[in-house]
Length: 353
Image (tube, rainbow, N blue to C red):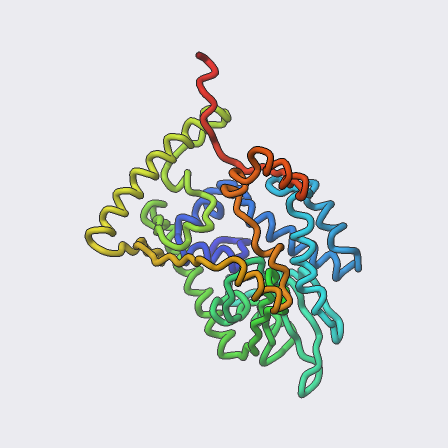
């Protein structure tokens, strides 16, 4: 076993999904760049915990954090982050002592240290006295049960062994939903032991892989793990140039290469059926669109207490046509222009010509 090494669920999940995704940051020490989604999730967690700890208005905390953010801006994200935080805060009614962002480190087997950061730990009334409930905040829309992954059973194990408990209530709180979207389960010792065995098995595989050449012990396994991976370039053996112009030139070439590869895969799907890689499936997935009688839909929305003028907003392409000419001037006078930016590249001609 590696001396003084502490494992986390993030590490073990990375190895289970793709050994290379574990190797690059945790063995080779490649710095993992934070994506926009990860930054949003981190800020949201800090806003919720900061409000619980200090009572400060969530928008004020969000503003300070956004001012230092790399990917997000105050203008575009302050209102959204404030609302996401309130989706929890408006429903949270503490019944006893609670702790936020609590870090717990314990041995789960001889020589194997494991750490967990619990977003919210509460003392709650139980049938036989005070009990413990742990909550993990999720910033994504996809809902699942606490025992669908090993994360919360492992956190429950840490708390149960720390407090001498036989069971811990665990819940996932999905912040994008305005109505409290909570998945809750009581995690007993059987579930905790299953999670412990899973973690020990992952650590054993990692320790065995460390004795092998990297390509053998930590192979890349393309699949669902690629969706959230920050090491796509390193995985392909690409050296991203430090100069912006060189990096942009590489991006242009990679876009065309990706188009070509996707075209080959689509041709195979068209002739031979779906292609599956890991947990991802390439196929011609069904797509549904709707056409309505606009007046009838507007009347139905009004009868249901909805404002059709807020819901029936033309998309940007239709607006480009509507905003031309004299009619466009009249439409502009009725609205408010909201400016923002979107990252892309467009043809602007050859500046050297």
